[in-house]
Image (cartoon, rainbow over all chains, first blue to last red; front, top):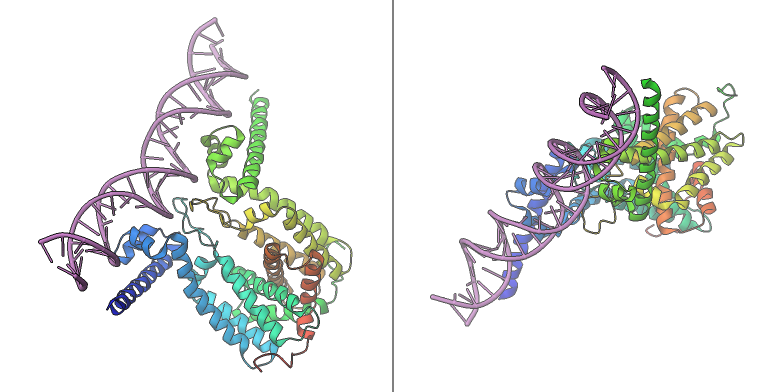
Length: 214
Length: 214
DNA sequence: CTCTGTCGTTACCGCAAGTAACATGCTAGT
DNA sequence: ACTAGCATGTTACTTGCGGTAACGACAGAG
């Protein structure tokens, strides 16, 4: 029969594919985001055309690579976000989950989010960062969905939820990125500060009277 | 004297530099972010090595290019942010200024923020996006400073202001990016929704009772 | 023993960044 | 006037990437 053989071959192909992805992962984690196709192929013990046969082009390989991490992160976030707890607690847990993830594997994070950066020969690297948008967009849409499901926002709730979803994700991302670079405080403090911001502390705070320039 | 001559030459050099930057601007606006050095040189009516003499490398040219737009945007934002008005009014004005800017020149915006994206031959383009970070960081720091100057946040105000500054800028950026792509509502609505979010409407909203999954 | 299809290779193309070496014109010192 | 210096411009090259074409083994089917 052809089918069984086909299945075998497909299985084998899938295994190879996974091996290649793991090799690519290793290279990206070692060499940073500017890993070349040659380097990845070498790490996998094969040569370039095989990579292209499996993934089409560089973007395809990257997309596959990013999807693994993205999916993992998103499922963690979903768990924190869907927990049966108070809203503020859930928000803090989700922020903390995200920050813990980028803190634990900053290499992966920078690969997903930041393009090239450390170009030793100033040549082009992985055109990552192209694809950071999908991750942020997916997170924004997921969050929007959860907000719309669980929070009563009155009319136009769907649109409002989407704005907020993307906005909050952007806030988390930018603050996390800055925090990861400067480490100006502990993770818990950052989480608290951001949650405070979302909880309207900016609106509640009084004007400063003795500020400079007044 | 050498000085006058030097001054003349330096002036001429500065003029050339500005001309080159304008040519680069035109090319980037026309061809998108993946403009090549050759193309820019051709647009300027000269050849590659001159670009390299003026800007060192591609990144240098980009940095110079980005600085122009970044400075312009930042000064607009500062004006809106420093106005002598109610806080919410100022926040809305600033959000609107930013969104109006990216709406008016999306090409510039995408050049500043997004890497490559439309690679027709899938080759590398400008390694933009590397440099989007500086812009976001600068905006975050500026905002933090204004917050710290004008809002009474109690102890630890400086750190809190910085977290909020970067967080709010990230919110604005992500929401704006999403909005620019999908255009799901008017600019005014977006501004209102984001200001509402910052004004604690998320905390104030009640739980939804009839949501799916409960 | 050949035919077919997958897995793998080498060797190449095209293109962009960046550089070296050469040409030209203006200003200045003698 | 002649030449030294210096900025400005050029052509022609190197390097290194993404991506591909064309060829070589090795499995099973007739």
